[in-house]
Length: 76
Image 1 (tube, rainbow, N blue to C red):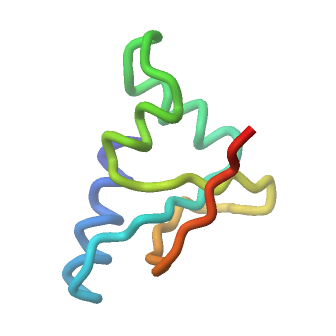
Image 2 (cartoon, rainbow, N blue to C red):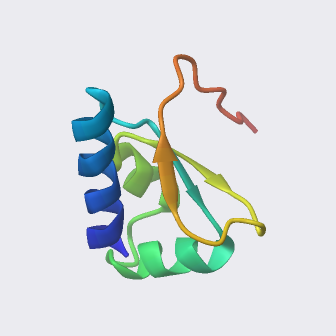
């Protein structure tokens, strides 16, 4: 999953000239992504390392990336 997301990000950067800052995935993709890292890495830490915010939605069939000028963060 991590390699797939990396390719999505590089292709997006090549096409648009800027790095994506949003990752759209479903819950199963999220589990695959977390499995790419050691247990001590939280999803927040992983997304920080990737330089993106994550949007998890059950309706998403394939992971995708995009860019937004201002990313709204959920602060709980």
